[in-house]
Length: 374
Ligand code: SAH
Image (cartoon, rainbow, N blue to C red; front, side, top):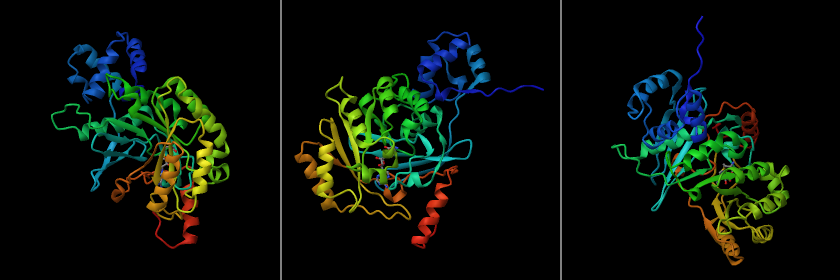
């Protein structure tokens, strides 16, 4: 019987891992940079086209390695230019990736997990349940595919994607070991060469992993705050029961202590009558004292069976004014791509739910209304 060993997917190796791979093959470590450039900068998947490698090495690579990407199941453009990909992994799970073009930048919203374990009450990804972490290759493949799809046909890397936000499906800091090498690749000049200020990890507040992230990566940070007191946050972001607001704000206060000009983006989804009153704004201003924070107010995007509603624009405006008066730079996120369900919190992919949460959610919802299941 012949034994087959799985080929290494080079797509998921950052510089350090790629160097180790070549050294283990008896090759020089500088090959790693060449490979990163071929795979990520030039978008080449076929070893035989990598002309600055010897024929022997190309042959050897074909035998032990591969550059494997998920299958693009669906690509959709919204009327406002927002673009969404549905990507199928080899195990049949699907994830979603979204590109949001703006005048001066293009932002790619990347998923880190199939589904999400956190179950925030206003997020439809959470309602799909959870299956598994994405591998580094699966995370970075979203950027690989977006860059290739969006660049013009002559194959030139034209930087349509200038920003990456880890705000798709999943909690990136609960998939720490796979997210870090993906971040390294995003920043690596041989790969995507994005600026550290233009790559953002968004977290619901996994405190120990936030501290580790600061040690290992220089990327920007966004925190999904959404409520100004523990009672409400426990309800809408259940992770708060483990990592309450005071501890979270303590970490945020010192996160960029060595770089006083950097700040943390605080995301705050505007839910009508739930977290959007002047009293909530006052509480928010209190908890944010001493935190280098900019506020990003996100009008709630509805999804099937949710009982939440979006705050009206006057209410959002008033909330913003109160925060601004207290000295917090505050922006209101423009809702993009909602005609193709590509807006924040609408990414669902197709999760083979192992938590059976979706089943429970739909059962509960059906007792409240009679809509078809999603
Ligand atoms: N788990 C990470 C990243 C995924 S969520 C985190 O919690 O930050 C990315 C952002 O989308 C979060 O700020 C989240 O609050 C927001 N979001 C989720 N559902 C939403 C909805 N229905 N409408 C508007 N924004 C939503």
